[in-house]
Image 1: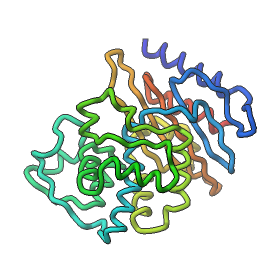
Image 2: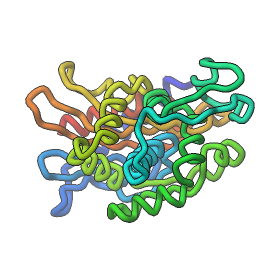
Image 3: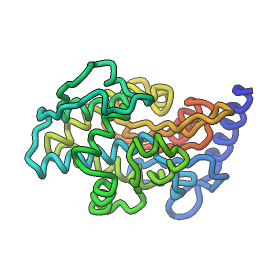
Length: 277
């Protein structure tokens, strides 16, 4: 059954993306809102449902990290500065590789927390950054200050664990997320914090079957994935967004958000179609 669903989903995506773009913005025709995708390349933007709102899930950890970079810079804090973490205070039943690293108490640097949150999508590391650097409202306000009004961050990881049906409270459009990555591309060398985030996301270990599976062999990617809670039918929201660094020195930015997806390969199929246009 899963193979059949995946095939149908892929055929829909292929059919949609094969059509000629419409309007002056070269955007692709709209289809049912089970997914949204956007690509920015060579100054042009195209997409499908790119202005629709989708739950970010752990893609949210990317704008949060940008806020943390700004917070550390404003407070004069170093990436190697530490906070003491009590394991008993952490969420126990969640995705959290850091839980295997210690018992009792341990000091974690801001660099380690960012690496865990961005590189391994650790939910406890993300929650600690909310606790010690700024709540969701602060992150959203920072996004507004940068000019991004379609990125909404209203809930922490702990709140989402308790209320998974409210995932849409942390939302973005594919277009806005692609534009945030474009901002990041141009500002990655502004300070040590942003450069560190860039290097960390270039070594992201999650979602290798998503956009990374669609890029040319010699290309590299700086990206962040997101995954929702699985449904009883075995489907779940799956996202990926990032910057593809091409062998010729150019770059492309892709953001793909899906709802009720049967597999990670769906994202790769969408990204591949966008890159082949």
